[in-house]
Length: 289
Image (cartoon, rainbow, N blue to C red; front, side, top):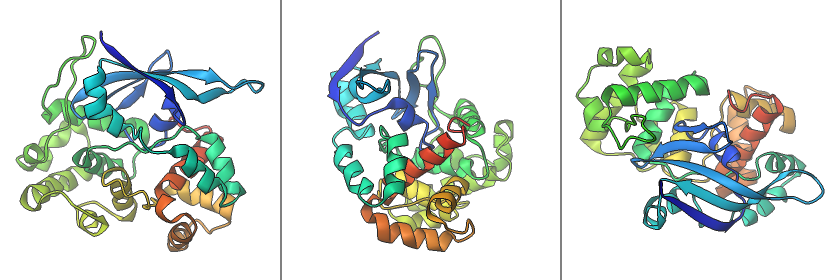
């Protein structure tokens, strides 16, 4: 099987990237690599890191190997998807200067990058995500894809399906999605699909917030991960917890947290959020739950 190697990559750690709650179609393999489907393609991604001298930690620098991709695939899909042209070293330096809290959080998830995901996939994923845990979100997305999505090229003998398009979901009724066991989220998906078919994909936070089932947290996630607005600072139960523990906020003071993040982190709020999110879940031993 073909593979493409990117040499001398910095500020990149697959575990940090794929376990920070931003995506749901990447799964860790026994060898520590990740297999995922995005942009209609399925690949396996692994990193051969440099070793940090004296501390035993794996480095966030090294060679990235993408199996089932060649140079043309990398340039047309994965370079942009993996946000390879952004200087995360400079971003980490800027955020670490804010305070010791961010410095600590960055050390925990120092190889995080914000994936440039497909907007429609992000909408579907985060509508499904509400009041849900990550393993169940992943299962719902895979089952929904198998039920109504287009079959893609098989990967290592396994069938792979794309998420159903907005047009496909718009043609269905909520009860048609019963096998996926989405519960109250099924009508949200169907209504949102019909809205997208009629009006097009949303272009900003306000238009995302008009989608069915898109409360403030879901809207912020779609804005960050789908519209790639790096100032968006999603606040879920984990972020409320870390803001309480590390910055002293009452966990119910979501407005205060949002105002604080906007003032303190500004255009880098979304990246700061990912470091904080990864840090608190790692601290609680639940980063893969």
